[in-house]
Length: 267
Image (cartoon, rainbow, N blue to C red; front, side):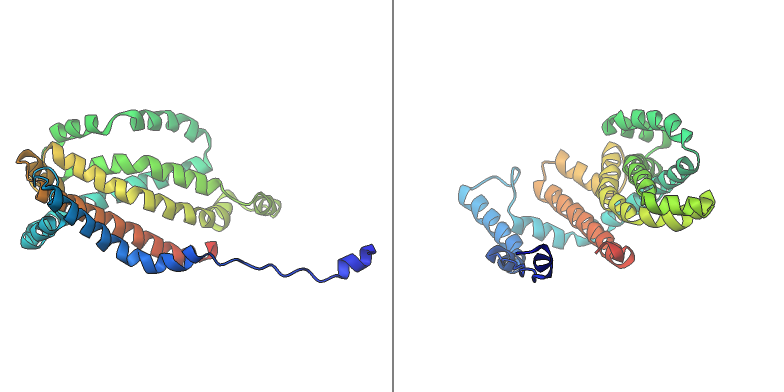
């Protein structure tokens, strides 16, 4: 076959094999959680595991329903602290990332301090903040801000630099200012990293608020968990943990939903 005939030859069709597992996964997933709960219930009852070790799901759900007012109030307190700390942590991280973009030596001066703060154990910071600021919401908000600051800072610094080199050189050839490069090139490229930071920091915000509540609080899910652990009340402890997990998964799902609508070009 000559070279021209080879180039004119039609390309072979590319067929995709449809794996059966890809068809069955959407049908199986809705039944996975009820099946796991049913297996948990039957195993605990068959083995006669004490309630103070592993309670059955029916007992946990019963506590959640009977004491729903208490859990809703505690969840509202914890969520308020987590949202406030998340906003502060991400706001400071965004300001520092933007400042480092316009003035690169700032990163070399600040990052060692940030890494040092990140290396300090969380359980060592929470009691100090409680002693300094009391049992109110301030230490919980500060703990959440400290815990979410570093992941947000790293994500935004990576996003503001993840620009197309050709587009950057083109804007520089057009004599664009640093502000114009930031507004039309760097900031749009950072949007996907923003949602990646959100999906990472939302569970961390809840963890920070709960850990701070364990060291001293008058309300919140951390307080409920601490009282339940002290009294060996495992159903209430599991109920608070399940509620925290549900809030975390909901926050992650909302961040993913907003990402699909705002950063639509990624799809």
